[in-house]
Image (cartoon, helix red, strand yellow):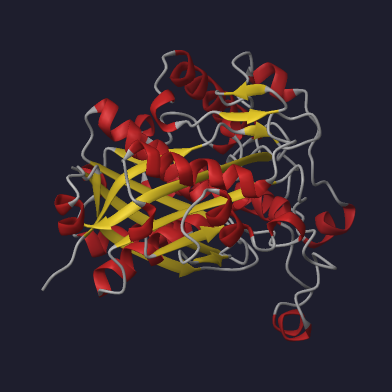
Length: 392
């Protein structure tokens, strides 16, 4: 018997600035994740006792996030027998969690799963689970002499390879804020956002969007990764990646309720989307951020679809050079690429981002009348996930 995994619902918290004083910085990451878990159960009148597993993406699995999945299940009030596990595929962690959930349903291992992710970057700083961010082990150092580079430098390498100017990067970044601001002002984010209480106040909107951002203001920012030793190694770099055309550090959580299609029907729940195809692939670890290009090509081939059939593309804006280079290769209508803004405006709370993008894409397909959406994310080490959804 063929089994089909469907998305019944998807929610996220607002994106809070990931620094002391940010709107979610006083909220424990367990409570961030528990907020979206409770919301899925409440919105769908679901008995949590029937949940087979909770699969959680989280990158910095240390300190308050070391067992965030299981603790969030308990904090949400779910029965104690409901398990949870955690996934780390870097920036694509919660997209991979969604893949594992859907694939487990298709295989017959599950009927009902919640997949999502969380990252409190203000409370558990990026990299705090590693002693040295640049220590990849002797085998990697020997294979990739004189060594790999940081993601920021990789973003510079991508910009140099594709001839993307500083002006183009800043123009794209300004567009991200403008698109997100328009979406926020029109109320089209509201259905996907679950407000979060912190110290007696309620955060109900993303606080990272800067509607006043302009190309002129972005042009005044200094390059963030300039390094003489790196320039000596890569002499074509022009140092064009800044804090303004990179993703923002934010706090947030997101989760999707995924079921076998017949189970949803039995529970009188209407599926919002079905999974068409999945892919995960790796590319050059030095360039690091280019894997979304082959991932997109492979997932479209698996789906048996051409690029023109996709109504909405989500390509994570880790840096502006990533979606720009992706579109140099794929050549899609730019109006379909991150039409509601991306991580430059909304932020990139690492383990949360894959589920956040999918939640936003699903809502956009419904509100704009689109049928197919494709999401892909670059991931540290040169990896990428890709997913094709069909709105139902």
